[in-house]
Image: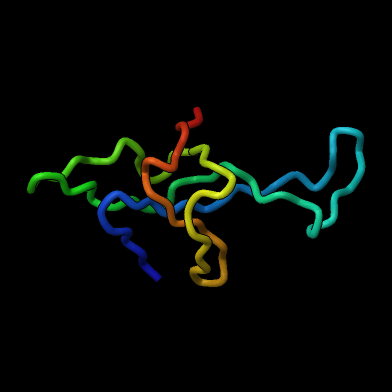
Length: 94
């Protein structure tokens, strides 16, 4: 399914969290926290202000860092994604 976010929204697929702790202990799924980073899948056209669009700073394919409680979880084609506003993204990771 093709998804095109509106305005300044960004669709992100979370990266997988670690299965083991630093000490080698296997962490069960119920104890894992959701990762706060992911890869941008799609971006909207930009925020509309005073009749003009302001383009977004993030682009599809970039790895980003976002807040723990940011955005809305959505399920697209059986995969979990998060839909958030550009201002909820803290940084672009290299």
